[in-house]
Structures are given as structure tokens and as C-alpha cells.
Image (tube, rainbow, N blue to C red; front, side, top):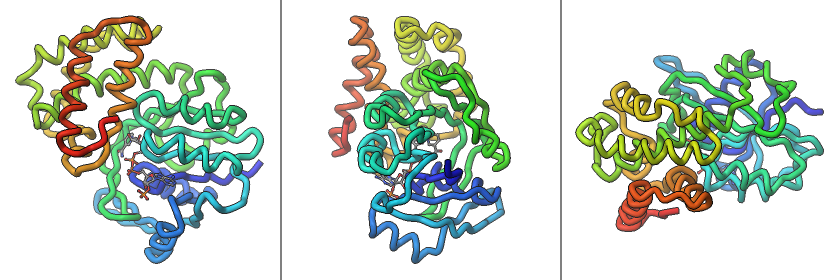
Length: 305
Ligand code: NAP
């Protein structure tokens, strides 16, 4: 089985992973959106990674999904709403026993992907690393963090896991990946939509802590109903700690809205509301928050799903 890391999406996280794996001498190939993006990448001559005052350049080979070589290992590094359609196009190239690592934030896109490729192994990831694109093919590693990887249906550690350590990608295998993803989703639901609606950085929510706590009570109910009692424990306290620790930062959803980009709301607050409805659980404040956010996005001309 080939040990090449195919990486779908050379955006912020995809480029960060690609550069570190290439630096460690691993075989890496980027899969770009179309011929036009491939030509632009080739004209740039590779990816540039900026880490503090260090700038490094990696001439990583790239292709589109129309190339023919089979794919054994794929890091899916696009946004949650792009993941399933992108994988549907790539499915014919996936070798028997292929393994996919899904970097998408939130929940829902992982199952959409798995439905497209029932014979592949889908490994879910939850990342607290931070990166952003300064320009096309030029990515800044902005926040040290950690990556948890796990497979909800198969606890065995993938044979390539040491590649991550070799590449200095901080990562741990966990059998509780769903708990981590649910907890992160709940933190996101309690903070990010309110930063958009109140038009503030995370610290601005210190003026709205009662509203935050009310949401945390409903989110904790939801987590317990979804079979994630551990993710519900101490949620309100952790949300408040995150607000304090990141007071000067703007949430990812705030930044997406600010830059006129589509948000991942469908896989965050949208997923929470759909899960509540499926369980017949009434969460009026969460529902109202979702509706206000959808209205706000529509008013800005942004997709609301
Ligand atoms: P991003 O910078 O927008 O990058 C996404 C990339 O996917 C873009 O380069 C886009 O191509 C590419 N893409 C989309 N559809 C494609 C297709 N069909 N074929 C090939 N490439 C395709 O996004 P990101 O910030 O890296 O986020 C990726 C995921 O990681 C999100 O779910 C996000 O929530 C999560 N995450 C991000 C961070 C972070 O710090 N950035 C941290 C934790 C989690 P174009 O360049 O052509 O548009």
C-alpha cells in the first residue's frame, strides 16, 4: 500500500499539514480544485509556510481530482460544506482499504463523507491548531495547538500514525473522538454565533454572560441526550474560561462573516438544532439563536446553511 499522503485542499490547515509532512521527508501530493487552481499553484512554484519569523518554501507536487493514480491515504482539508461533494468526485480513485483523515470542524460532514465511501476507513480529527492564508499558497501558522484523531467504529491506531510525530504534528489517538468533537461543537455554539450577533471579539461576551450560561444549560441537556454526558460536564465553566483566555480574539465565525465568506453554521449550531429536533428535545434559546443567526447571515447576503 502506497505511503503517499494525498491532501485535498491547499488552504490554511491543508497547507500547514502538507508543509510539515514534506519537511519530514514524507511523500505528499496536493489535490487542487481544478486546472485553473493547479496552473496558479504551479506558477507560484509551491507552498510557503510562515512560522514566527521563519519562512520556508516547499515545492510539493500537485494534481486535480482528475489524475489517475490510486489514493490510499487522504487528508481531507476543505471546509465542512465542501467535503462530501469533493469526496464524491474522488471516490473512483480511492484504493481498497483507503484511509481518510477528516479535519472538518463541527459534526455532520464526517457522516456525509462516510456515506460517499462506505468501503474506506474514515478517521475523524479535532484540531486546536490555528493557521490562516496570508495569500494564495502562503499560510501563516498562527496558533500552537493539538490534534486528536480517532475512529468511532474502529479503535485500532493506523499504521501511519508515527508519521505525525516524525513531522512534529502534535497528535494523539483517542477512542473518544466523538466526545471531543461534541464538546468543541458545544463551545463553538455558546460563543461564535453570539460574537456575530453582538459584533464583538470573544471578550465582548463578558457583558452577556447570562445569555451564555442559558445556552450552556441547553447545550449540556443536548449533549446528555445525544449520549455524551462527559462532554456536558462543566461546560459553562469551560466556556467562560475560553472567553477569558481568548478575550482579544475574533471567533472563526466572526472572521468568516467579516470577510464575506460562507460560515460552517450548518455543521455547528445547525447540527445541534437538528440533533435536538431528532431527539424531540425543545431548546428554545438555542433555536432562537439559530434563527437570529440565519436572519443575520441572510441580511448580509451570505449562505445560511
Ligand atoms: P480554508 O483555508 O478555506 O481551506 C480550504 C481549502 O479547501 C481551500 O484551499 C479550497 O480551495 C479547498 N477546496 C475546497 N473544495 C475543494 C475541492 N473540491 N478540491 C480541492 N480543494 C478544495 O479552510 P481551513 O481554515 O483550512 O479549514 C478547513 C477545515 O478545518 C474547516 O472545517 C475548519 O473549520 C477546520 N479548522 C481550521 C482551523 C484553522 O486554523 N484554519 C483550525 C481548526 C479547524 P480554494 O483555495 O481553491 O478555494
